[in-house]
Image (cartoon, rainbow, N blue to C red):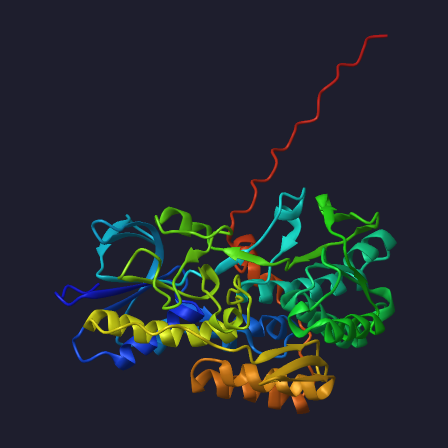
Amino acid sequence: MSTTERPRILVVGGGYVGLYAARRIQKKMRYGEATVTVVDPRSYMTYQPFLPEAAAGSISPRHVVVPLRRVLPKAEVLTGRVTTIDQDRKVATIAPLVGEAYELPFDYLVIALGAVSRTFPIPGLAEQGIGMKGVEEAIGLRNHVLEQLDKADSTTDEEIRRKALTFVFVGGGFAGAETIGEVEDMARDAAKYYKTVSREDMRFILVDAADKILPEVGPKLGKYGKEHLESRGVEVYLSTSMDSCVDGHVVLKNGLEVDSNTIVWTAGVKPNPALARFGLPLGPRGHVDTAPTLQVKGTDYIWAAGDNAQVPDLVGRKAGNENAWCPPNAQHALRQAKVLGDNVISGMRGFPQKEYSHANKGAVAGLGVHKGVAMIVMGKFKIKLKGRLAWYMHRGYHGMAMPTWNRKIRIFADWTLGMFLKREVVSLGAIESPREEFYEAAKPAPAPAAKQEPKKTEAKAS
């Protein structure tokens, strides 16, 4: 940690907003003007729009994460959690991965904790569900799906096969639709290498409580996305929800019951619950309440942006929607981070703050290789694309939005190799418990059982 007397800018969270805001601050800051400290439980930032492709093996999981210390060489990067913030003393309590918690003073504060999966008290969900918020979950899902194919191929028990080859996805937004599209694509490819497993043996189910999927791209493209998935054999159930999934027995509100080893939960996100301990003004859904300048309301030294912030959408409000808020997506997070970084520097120097305003440029979604939907907004015109062209738009947009040229080049290299080489379909399920085999080899052999002397019987005299 720094021991200098320079002002400290504390960035809580190293995700998209935290990383880009810290980079922007360091770029605009004069030499020695302040110390930038970033605190996050992980030492890397995850580009979440690429998680479905990482789960399908189209991109190496290492390439969808950005190491914070490499990208922010002049910043302090602390691996841990901010547990409390004392605004009166301007002190944050840091809980490192190991060791005792300690206090860290700051002068300026950036809240960039992001969001976590929004779950409900559904019986069995905590034990059976698989999320899609981190690269670890994407790797785990890929290994898990391929492992289910291995199980189905190696057994003659029809009940075990049916349960292994049934895949349930809850949530029809970007994360759910893209993940089921990519995973179905991967499973279809993988089935070619199994003698007793075919695509027809598998059952893919997509469930959403809303009456449509992919609402971000509009009703027409959402309807196309649903019809496209159904044409690939995916069962889509709308206006319904999951009541329970105890021991993998999935019960839907519409009466459908299936047994499945794979239940993927992508039914939305909510602000990080840790915000409730920071003493900040929160909106009705738990977001930090900010002004259009991204300053937390009631303060002049705290800023917030991204998924954990309630940021007024000035463009929507000018159009007449008085309750418009910026949606939680990468498009807004990137632009908010830059404005936030500039405003921190302005606040430090006593200059006026700039308001954040950005018109929506559209949305893109990939549904597997060569498949996708896209809505591009150009002024008053909306261009709607589907199929291969939309897929190119999806990859092009997110490929360029990926932080650092190092990661951009690696991502495009993965895609280029994928054009000429077949997809890898190997399961590395043992990665979740890598020491198990060594432990079995190294543990002491059980002591041999003691020999029992045969009982002597006395012959009875005749």
